[in-house]
Length: 262
Image 1: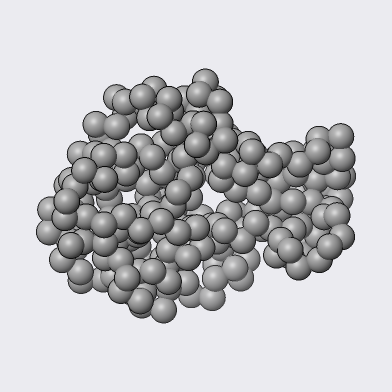
Image 2: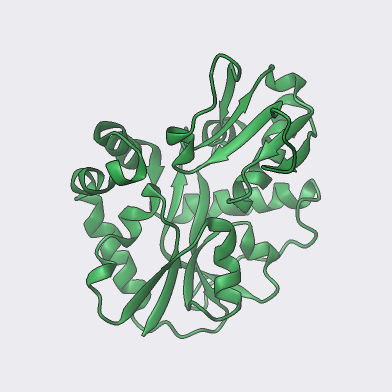
């Protein structure tokens, strides 16, 4: 039995819809920030990890080019909300469920606004946050009061403005030198088949995740990208390089793809 770890957000459905019918695969669901641990400890053979985790893992990893969660412009579900203009933000309270998004907001604030704000975990203080980074379904289901948080920034759009490249938030990863058999081919087949079924996927899962069906379909088909080709890989490497430049990661490891490519 192959154990596969992923998130429960709506955005992962086009990558995993149909896996429940595979009798030799067990799907484990975690928040993004827990997926690396699930992979490192061997509780899963493959996981949909935040891309920053490739650089932070205590063990060598490989990216499996069988799909990813990314965007090429507005992401919709990775947003910074603020009570003041972004150029005046000193402290950001961050939703720590996504390591990649927390790293990205640091880059965006430096490069667009010349700011290096303090990043404070959500729940660390009872005070109303000056600025709030949210990710995933809660951007839609728990949007802050816009009368108070009157400034917002989509990090996918901000990255596109900075780099001109697509952004990848998460990709399939495995421990280096793991033999996944035909699983990468099967995952890529599911991704490709689900691309033709986005309306059905939105109709099936929107309500359970707190979305309207129309918005869910617009999000899955318009905002998100699930390919992991050359433009996306270049975007990942650019993101890692900027993380290293700003001290967000200490070491810059070269990309390593499953199947021996690097």
